[in-house]
Image (cartoon, rainbow, N blue to C red; front, side, top):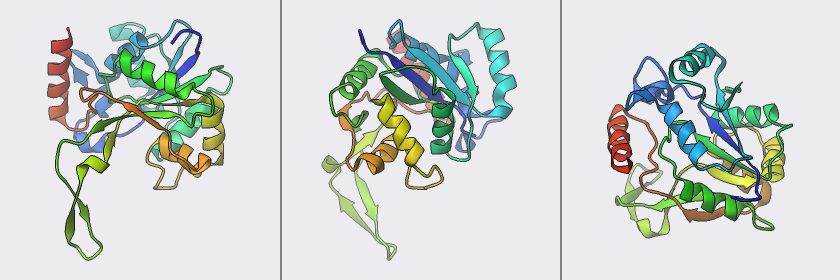
Length: 235
């Protein structure tokens, strides 16, 4: 958005063990190019001219990243080796590594979500820029019925209207996000995303903005096929 400087950190340090491939899912091919390349390009289209894009990967994947830059051309994103034992640790490392990059808003995006749109990013940055904001996250309505697991082993039906599925990127005032992560314990299993880190620090959750059902996360091999279909329709 005009006048708002954003730093977009794309987290791509996960092992992708559920995907079942030789490489982490974010480095597997989708429509002829690695998923991470699509993700960076999508974020570039959603970014302003003064925005910065940083990709946080694990140290063992640096050679793979270097080959991608040669084979598919410069991505325009800066690479940092920031992999940690948890997602929160990786983000904390990335924030420390980018401490000197000035920004009003920082977004954190999953490298395995290659279909983010400018409209969603604009909504997030605008909401995170409001005075007193604790950040903003994109959500979509649930379409499946859901049930809660009970301690005794049973289950019970839950009204899905009271729940939302959370996506990335998640956007926060830059200073707030850095301070929240400085105060957090990255090994805490309850810190499953950046919103949970900021919520613990602020005492309240971030604003919810409309996400996009097509902003899927690549988790299983069939998700690649779904993403290719969505990409084909957009083109």
